[in-house]
Length: 126
Image 1 (cartoon, rainbow, N blue to C red):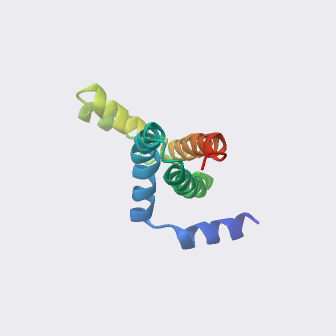
Image 2 (cartoon, rainbow, N blue to C red):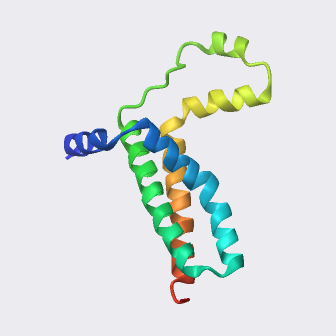
């Protein structure tokens, strides 16, 4: 079963699609949802919610795919990494690299939950 999941998710994996889904899920969807809600464009909001659900599902599945056989690429290089980080932003980037698949799972789950919540809330409006 695990091998089937790995083969299925590796066949749909594309770095550019993942990048676009992350940008839409984490950046564009929240501001788009607020703007469409204030304009009372509920049909467009439902379409944006469905797109966010699909994008977050893709991000979540790729995160699970990568977490199955994940190993920290910076393991054993703590001294080198500590010498290259000069500010707090660099430390955040290093931390994100260390927990990348888990960050994808969290972002995918969170944005998917918000999109489903918005879809349920505004489903009844025409």
